[in-house]
Length: 89
Image 1 (tube, rainbow, N blue to C red):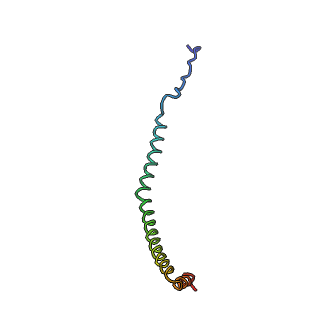
Image 2 (image 1 turned 30 degrees about the vertical axis):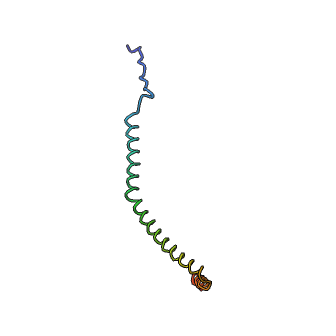
Image 3 (image 1 turned 30 degrees about the horizontal axis):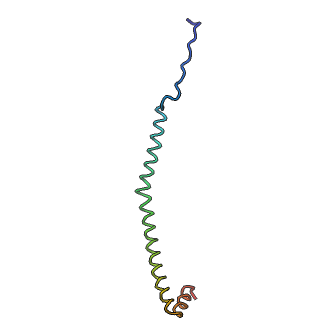
């Protein structure tokens, strides 16, 4: 029987996923889902608070500018005074 050679086993290709590939895919999905949870609960509230403060400040500035515009439309001297006040002269 030493003269007989055994044929080497051939690997089956295209027959499903190996355990290693499945675990890698699960790991990637787990990392992505943890990143999404972190962004939703940690990053978004922080950025939302900053944007809310900026928006409130912008509305306050808009209100002041609207009042100055109305005063400027009513009187030409008020407009010149406000222009000098804004320019700091």
